Image (cartoon, rainbow, N blue to C red; front, side):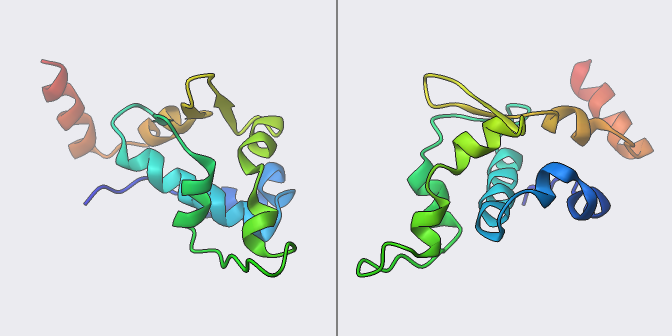
Length: 119
């Protein structure tokens, strides 16, 4: 099982995160989880926004156009406007600073593992 570093204090106090709606926060944490599953330093290949929203398990009521699922649409563009992600034409989504944050404050064992992988 893969894991990623999550800075709880940053999540609670970051102005970009604070500006997001609850629905956008849920989609963003799902995006972080997807990035952690990839070995591409925070790049999610061919990211489909509808699939992202479905992964959050937001309820889609076909009889109500004003529900969490429909409010989540356009979240990737909103993240890009906040400079949280960059969107590529091929559908790739890159989380800004994801790779750098994962490399900060490495334990001795993590540093040794990276050294061994480079050798």
